[in-house]
Every structure is written in C-alpha cells, then in structure tokens.
Image 1 (tube, rainbow, N blue to C red):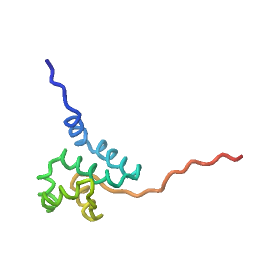
Image 2: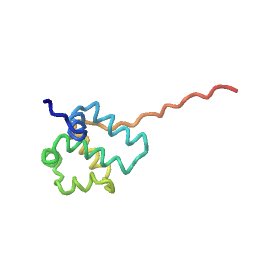
Image 3: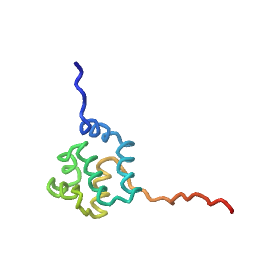
Length: 103
C-alpha cells in the first residue's frame, strides 16, 4: 500500500522549487498580508533547512525562528539576506492597472 504524503510534507517539497517558493512569498505581498509574509518566508526557509540557512547567513537559529513568527517584524536587511541565501531576489516593478472603458 502506497503511503500518502501529508499536506505539510507535500508543501515542504514544493517550497524547495524556486518558482513555487517565489509565488508563495509573492502571494503574501500581493494580498498585503504582512503578518503572513514572515511565516511564508519561514516556510521556504524550513523547506531548505534552518541550520543550513543559519550557517549561510550568519544569523543564529533562534533569531531566524523569531523572524519567521507571525508577529515577526524582520528588517529589510534580514529579509534580503535570507532571500539571497534561498536563491531568491526581491524586485519592485510598476503595478499593472486595468484601463477603464470610456462611458
């Protein structure tokens, strides 16, 4: 009998894919859900390994867990450090607006 993967383990596997991880984090930004943003970043970090991330960034594990808490308020510097270590980059681009039809 084939063992069924749990939602959590399936999500962690998908978050190792840079395209999926990028879309996951971006959705929190697009939805303006600032309390979910550190959690989303943390989910991606956990998928890649917190210990590995701590080694690569020089940020200790305890600090990383605080950053990834729903009440976390990470600095832009820490977010960019973490993103870089995870193989992601932050971008700012013009917002797309729908043209209004003439009445």
